[in-house]
Image 1 (tube, rainbow, N blue to C red):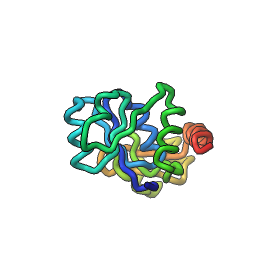
Image 2 (image 1 turned 90 degrees about the vertical axis):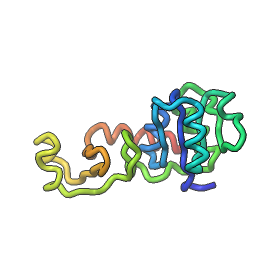
Image 3 (image 1 turned 60 degrees about the horizontal axis):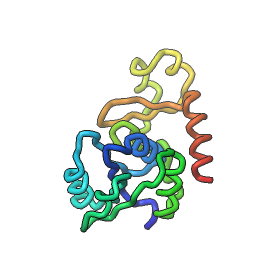
Image 4 (image 1 turned 180 degrees about the vertical axis):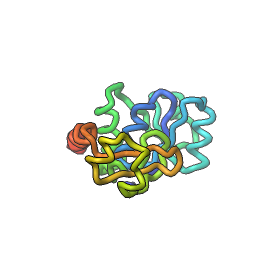
Length: 152
């Protein structure tokens, strides 16, 4: 199984999709897709379908996982255990669109991020698809604590 597994989450699992991306896992998510479209995407792209809908995960020809809990930490723990994952490469994917982030220089971030951030941060990442900048602010420390807890 390993860390190369790719996921697609149904419309009920947007927060889970975001956190799988934060952990570094390729996770497709589009809240506008219906069950048929999500199943089609899972098959076409060789993704594991994640859903809380028992009928959806029982569809033939799908590799899927019924997400049992409504609690995010329990959802992530279930997925990490089921696929024997190690919480990938945190902060390597855009939480918004799933693209791989690119490291950029402070000068490239200048004028694109708040002045205080530009003056105080050394490392920046950019999403090449949605042009969002990311840096290691105070939220990053809290997120790392949560990631360490998830890794158990």
